[in-house]
Image 1 (cartoon, rainbow, N blue to C red):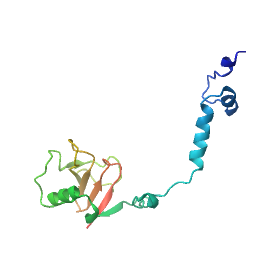
Image 2: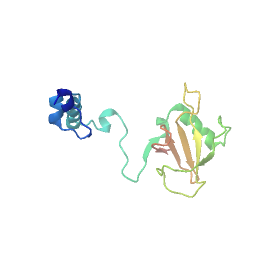
Image 3: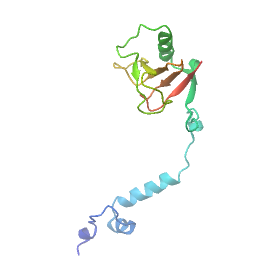
Image 4: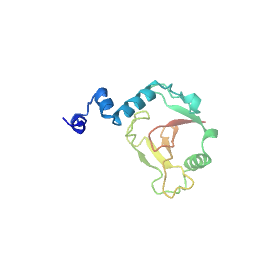
Length: 148
């Protein structure tokens, strides 16, 4: 059997021994995976991220800690416009199910202008009929309830 034939494995489950024998990059991948698994994980507070909310709870952000564009959008919502985008005020359906479940029409979404972006960007404020406001800067992947 030729050396190159020994290195050909049709299965993705090649053994570490075969990887070593063939001198392939698989060994490096296994070692890199082990290093990643064994490194200590830096917690959110060390990175400067806000602490995660408990399961079923939504994190909060103070109005003063919002970007200035979000504070301006909040002021526009409170005085009912005029809004810079046609889609401001449309129903937010909560498809991600990150906000409390309510009937359709309970939530409305508003664009928070993102400097340097020519489109609507990812930042939004979602207003609840009950008077609560939620901020997202990652296009609905996460929310923070705006604390007055």
